[in-house]
Length: 337
Image 1 (cartoon, rainbow, N blue to C red):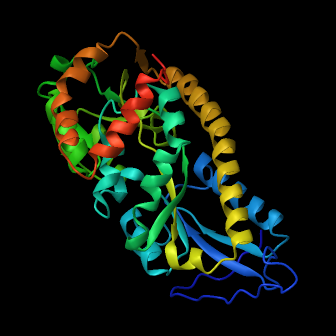
Image 2: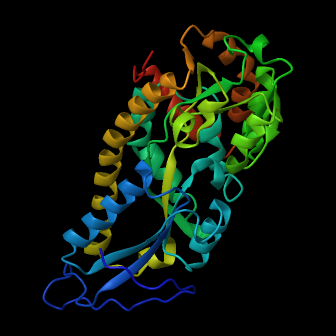
């Protein structure tokens, strides 16, 4: 995939649609800018590369991407702002990072929103997710697809977290999200908002007693060198989302939009396989590091502890309709328990 020099600003290249057919592709090459904060060995980067390659192939070279990994263009919040203004065309961010741009994205951080992986996948590949993605069009961006980011669990330096009482008195790092803070408080821990890059040192120095994330954080960020107790609380499944600048999207022909959507969905499926392999490898490597994995967690007690959050969502006029639709899919039997 051809690379171009990094530059900022909204540079929109006019799309010349051939008169022979309304579905024709542009005769000019369009290079789009896509940012994310993962390193180049991460499955997310590999999946975004795959997305870019598919888009270029399907468009016969008319649509290409310049990808900026490693937070080159700033934090997730900064990348979202750049996408809103059109300084970049797309970015991959955690749904949690979108909470401050649209309250509807707080829904994904509600603990035990999903019964398990099957329920999660069914929702994310339904019109429920599409409706959530499209709800931010007036904010300058919309969601194009999602990427699996695993199931979040608690892991600590020395105390296995098997029930809510095990969290009492423990300082637990959380993402800088009001939802994550409230979840940890209700579960019994002392929430400590902190940037992800600071977690390893904070664990090492005892500033925090633990954190919550998927298994890959144990190895890709070396948290398993310090935190030896990984407990399957399975409290949250928060997707990564590929968001796109709304104005830029509207500048594409229907055929170009179709190609980008198709490439995005195929890259999501590609990512599922990468993520599953990465997770299995991370568990094996973490066990070699001395991490113990605990399956005997009282998840029913954890679910009960955060019920006030579910009751609050049911009273929220913006979130309740989406919440009820997600729960209806649970009733239809799309679960993983």
